[in-house]
Image (cartoon, rainbow, N blue to C red; front, side, top):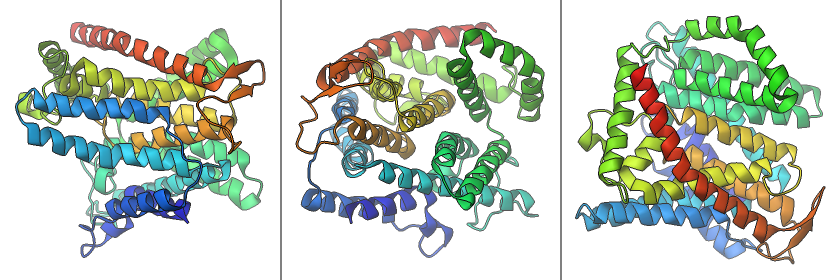
Length: 423
């Protein structure tokens, strides 16, 4: 029952069918579904646990409050912390605790893949409409496909499609039926078309990152480098068909300058930032970078927790300090990598898709190591494929590593910006 309600949340927050019609587009269906799901979770769910992601997200919530307190707006800090808690922390808690079996994760993936197919079809209708308008009433933006709600921007459209692409490959491998296999094959083709009509440079870069990492993991550095050299002409041709990736283009220059100004906002307010939601008060454009946005608005304190949570989840899904990873862990890692790479070109630090991925990562980790309902997740020892290790110790190492990487990431981002300014 609780899982069914959670599935309805995914439908309302991603597919958003209520926004297809003018009469219901303002309904806060997803918000009420979360409330009902939270009540059902408290009343009916057993074997509750606390995902480590939540500890880091509470640090982000505190950073939001402190960032506003130091601007002198106490009420704004409380309000914005509450919004973050309701829209991000609670969904991670619910997903991590309710999605307790592999088949449930796969059903969530099926809903997300279905959403991609609906989005891409909506984009297809837009591209073939004389007015460039889809059935929802949402139109093209500069001849680029869009959807509705938080995906009404072509870049968000492309990011979401790319995030679900690894899930399609996973479900294709798991499917046993003729219909299922061909459905996911068509979904993969549709997602590639979706990336094309989004005409998003950030999505294209993210796709190249996923492909490059896959070949590196599959064939090693030497063979993957050879593949890269061989396919380089094709990559150039594909990138040439997208909006030109050129630092001399006005939009690209504006984006790099926004990154530069955002980093200086961070340097001027290193500890707690300029305040949540105040980036555009200091710059005419948004940051166009999820990392810069958090650094500027929440300072180093908030960035360490936010980046640490993303990095921690990726470390869990990659099996660092643990044993061999499962196929579903690898799938979640690629989806997180898709967000991490495309997020470098979009200000989506607080987008619901990130926190859905974080919740699913927590759920996948729990499924692998805590299926015994009588055990305590914080203390149970597990005999892995290669060694026996303590789960609490592994998670502590993963979290420590993520928190150490966060300040290093700040330096890396600064160097990237300086290089782009020189180019």
